[in-house]
Image (cartoon, rainbow over all chains, first blue to last red; front, side, top):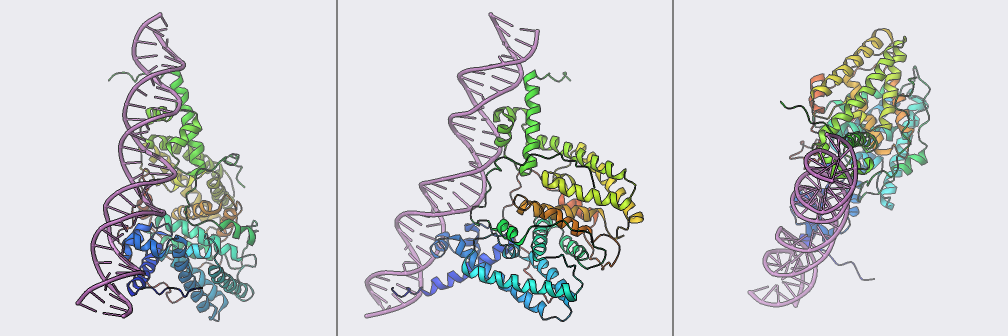
Length: 232
Length: 232
DNA sequence: CACTAAGCGGAAGTCAATCTTCCGTTTGTT
DNA sequence: AACAAACGGAAGATTGACTTCCGCTTAGTG
């Protein structure tokens, strides 16, 4: 096979710029940022962007590896703390705060993108560390025993909902909500939790294609249950 | 002023059909359902729909009054219960479950639509009842004293996030999350909550135009804080 | 310095999804 | 039966994103 042709210096520079621009925009609007916006932010023409990244997924992958690393860093930092509850608490709090700064964070943990080998590796790394953190907090930190990694994912989705709706106008809403939620996680007066999705289900559910996230129209629709089920 | 011209009988019937179709579709996909989809669901032509509802907001308003009534009914039912905590618990649980069945429910409580007199009336009714429920649960039901109506709104936004992401594949996720969250609301080991948005802020934040919810591109963007703030 | 191929920009062509109008046809009402 | 009201849905208009293409620019080399 022929040696990969070297890129010209300006090409390298532009590649870099595009990547930074993508990070910036993905952070700001989520990963549905348009190609043109990214190009503008990078100060290059769309043509350039396309030559370098013919497929949007490459771009996404690059950015995601970066964000994933940030998560891993956070996890490492937290795992280093001695107090198990403190560590867990700091993790959840900081992660959710990061989400507010960077709307692509949620996607890293909750996936929503086609698994490439590299991404898979980072992801399993994250899951592993996260589970470690959870396990420790369960045995030593008073974290309720029925709390799972899936519950973290769900929390991120929930937090994403708040952020999408009001982060710009109510920057305090998310943090308060998370703080509140954390209060439900320590053993104390625990209610019987309904079973949530299994890890497999959760993984499958979040495995959505990235490009063209346009959802046509739900074909049929569930059989519209009665809205006002007898409370309790 | 001339007496309002009577509608022809078929016109009346169609008006009704359109309204039902709108309810159905708004429930299924949220209020961004397209005009054509509604028309098809109603079994009428788009032209008909347009003549009857030249402005999409009328349609929305009609549907929302209906959904609002459902919320009020729920509230009344819950307020009738004797146990204050049970009542509150049932309210939150059922409301969140309703959200899963009907994606326009969240919008009714968290608004997101231009206040018409009629809507305002229903809304204040709901808020009033809801606050009553909260107040009772606080004094008699062990609800933590720092919990407010705004926290309910935030929870709905969060729940909407979960639903939007995975309700189709993980129908259990939302319920489990809500149950978990409810555990954080009883007095017990309470942490110091960060202040959330004030009622005024919350109202203002959720006051968004309904039509054309396309957000162009966030003009500037916050000053990108460092992502990995020192945990804790 | 000059030559060449790699690289660049962005206008223009595609495409899909919605909104909106318009008009020939159907239908209710008197 | 006759007329206006109402209907359906094709067609035009808009919008926003994706992708291609080509004439100009520039880095790298001899």
